[in-house]
Image 1 (cartoon, rainbow, N blue to C red):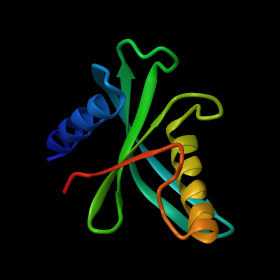
Image 2: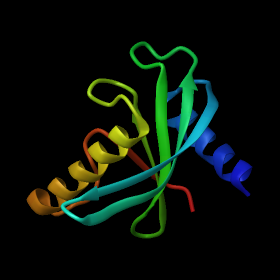
Image 3: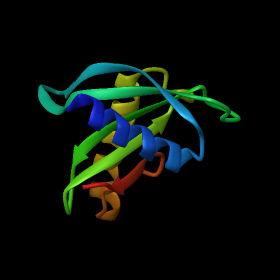
Amino acid sequence: MLSVEIDRLKKAVEKRFDQVVTFSETVPVVLVKEGQPLFQGEVHVFDLAAHPTAARAYAWWTDGYPGRLFQAVLHLPPIDSPHAAVEKAVMTRRRNRKGRGHEVPADASYADLT
């Protein structure tokens, strides 16, 4: 089952960044802020073949409306790890919800792949 999930994420990352990617590893990530769990899951790391500025991308599934959503973030400063990618995306989404009433972070990609 995990290989199917990784393959779906691989295709989504390739489409999102218009790059050939190679799966590198899966990293468990737990994000807790002020005692509140904000994310607990697996982030899949992909190496990018020829991206002009990033050598890696981080991708994972998140629950959203209308279903399971794909999220991908490039390894660009200040994003230097799977944890940093999730933290940036989650905090941006929370800030956007408060300020503008929507959930899509400016620096992340969502695609409904359910």
